[in-house]
Image 1 (cartoon, one colour):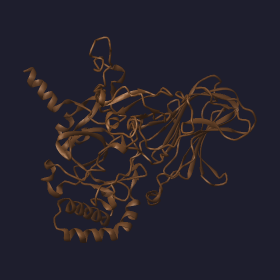
Image 2: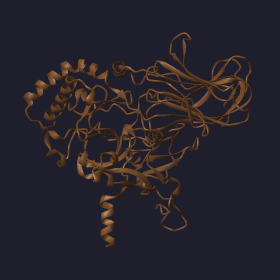
Image 3: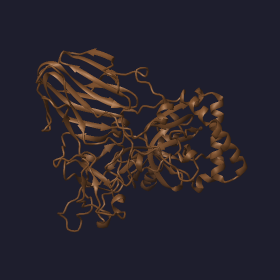
Image 4: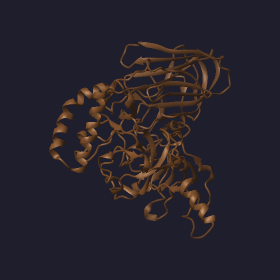
Length: 531
């Protein structure tokens, strides 16, 4: 009876899985190593597959905080001492009940059958839902419900699915040639029309917290500073009241004019420390950033301003000593043309009392949060986007670095950090299976998700074999013919929602001879809910 109950529980309620790869890092880890950076002491994990390939030089793990190439890697495949992948629990019963409102929702981490091999399980983040069109542009996700689309766009999208099937099945090449010619001729007009209906999909708050990656945390400054390592640097050649030499950044006014520091020495790209040797590396400039710190005003009356730039706009949040808080925007390159977007007034700042500040520009929305409460934010009208222009924009274009300015009041900043959002890369398919080789759902190659079809993305975007890349299909789905669309996961292939890491890599001890490479001790500090 106990065996039967355990089997039923595993089959229909909750099942345990182990993460095999790093496609969801750093949310979830596959087999990996952990290193404390030799330079800045930032702890991070790296994938074992990256350091086991043939390299022209020694294996290395590039620190995501300070860019230092760590070469003293004690955990490698050659030593057979890899840290195990995270063991997780997956909630299955909502799918078994068939209740739509209990199914995995957008941004949930979801387990499903690999479309290329029905005997394998994959884990990704569910991003696209049935009954919508999805396109990834400049690292963000845009969708449009099919109910809101004109019939001519829907007909065009269905023709694209038909052409995808003909190419996959290698049947009726004559019809495929006719369809390809028709789709090529109508592509510019249809894409421009579709752009008017697509809207950005902002991440759920819990998911967003999991998707931030460190750019530079000033609690972990590099010790052997070189030109390719990040640091906060005073702006200008004259006297500057900022002191960034210690972990506590201090400002002492030296005049009436505002004085600034900016983050230099590091390009903000879609790179991950998990991709150890940067063989699978990002090369796209990321403008979705978060600047946060704990601020303590000391004395005087004045203000502090935080600035984040993306493409042709610089957004700034100003906090004054009297409690006035303002949000501004300036077009980069314009001669001082600054527009006030929003303003509010809280109580005056209290000397020697900490306040937590979070200023972010993410998913085409800028916000200022103070002590955990959002006090200012842009509207869609204040921060519009043009998808036609975004598709043509260069993704490696540099922009102004984060900047902090102050005037009039003495203050101190602690735990100062800059983080970046996930950037979903524009994948390239091999051969001619997609238009100009573009991955499914990427810029210029939108995907229509029919009833029962889902779109999945990995958190480690440059190193994730997800919906963007699937150009083949396993036998378990191939028999469905045109009813299965490449790049999607059918409803009946979903297994459940991942919700808890119950056994991360265990802690090791040398006290028991011969077991120093086995994680026997529960690592309670890294047991966590999956967001």
